[in-house]
Length: 257
Image 1 (cartoon, rainbow, N blue to C red):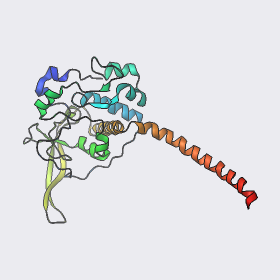
Image 2 (image 1 turned 30 degrees about the horizontal axis):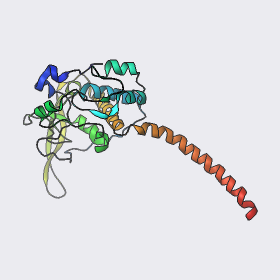
Image 3 (image 1 turned 45 degrees about the horizontal axis):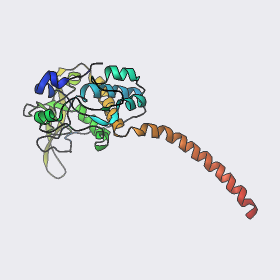
Image 4 (image 1 turned 120 degrees about the vertical axis):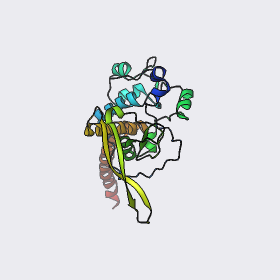
């Protein structure tokens, strides 16, 4: 697995723009997407998907963003990743297995390069819906009018560049004008045109977006994995207990009746 160590020290401000940042845009962005959202439901029972999502997060997100509410050893335990593999391939030099997942980028440098430090992503899976995150990763497109050269259909005028462009490739968005029920005309997405293929096919990249979304949803509430597993047994216990409680009630009330 490729490690993103000391990215900003080695690449400087220009290289930093190639890393993922969900920093707020410099201009007002709208949450109303100009497209029909592709349906998506997170699956926290899909451990291979979560493992791949963790790999993508470390390689493409962690250099800019922290996830300080998550510790490496907790992630390793929850996702069944050997601790030695986490230490070798998923941690920055100097980190310990019990440390939080902190970014290697200094906050001062982030503010200088982006105007604001990229936010912590620990709770992004709760702030945004899984469907929103999934479509967000799919809909970056080239925009010569954007300072970074990129824009996003779901998060219009977003300030960040496309960090996973080497996987998805380069694409342009083709818009068309539609008239809404209120008579207002607005541009909506017609289609994407691939201008330069990436390392992955379209379906492979969609799967990568699913996996990364799954991991971000997991980050937002890691206890859900344990709670869901225990919840099944709790329900079984309550059903069994209720059955025996009913029999006991009948036994006590038989003489009264």
